[in-house]
Length: 300
Image (cartoon, rainbow, N blue to C red; front, side, top):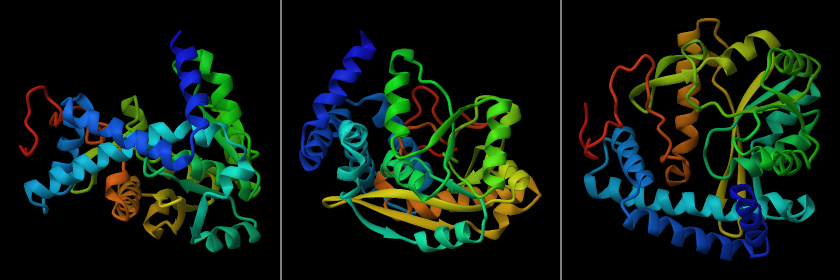
């Protein structure tokens, strides 16, 4: 029943013009704010940690804008997943920095795109798949009835999907070594201790995945950060070459560069980052920034 409702809502929202979908999303964001929801609490906590240089009123204003942007993301997803790619592509009103990606491809290098939870990463992923032989590791959704929809939506510009298994990783490395492309979300908190290390992000230590750093070491691919900024009438795509420190064999150096790269991206449009995600978690737990009753504005 839940999957049916999700599919119905996505198809219904796909019928709306993009501007109207976003307007609905902003209304959802206002409800999240005024209901004093968990997303509001987490967003405020994250913004307090990430932007100590801002005054309380500025941080509150940013948190409110962030929840509205999250609502926009949710409500425009039907449009992004169900509209034909030829139509959706017309809403990509600007692309910046992709010439460096094209040059790397011309030189026969594999390319790893690091796409943080910023703007609309689904749009970025669809565009990236048009740049060449694209393979993405894939983890089935919790609602298995949505798996066919997700695979169809994400694969409609040519991307191949491989399972998040040892065999899938081997296929990914081979694809990159022969000049292919992949896209990774670099700011997910890994589920197990062996998959990450604590590294500073926005001035605060948090558990950071080592997968991207190790993949670059194994494949010899070039890395770029990318995101689809939500702008008037559509999206602006950004491609930014990664700092050379990201390729370091020293994992601490590499992870620090990874987090600096994500930070540089989100500072372009900080309200469009997924601040309702508990990004500042550490493993093993050092300081629970999200403990029940911890007030926004309280710093460790």
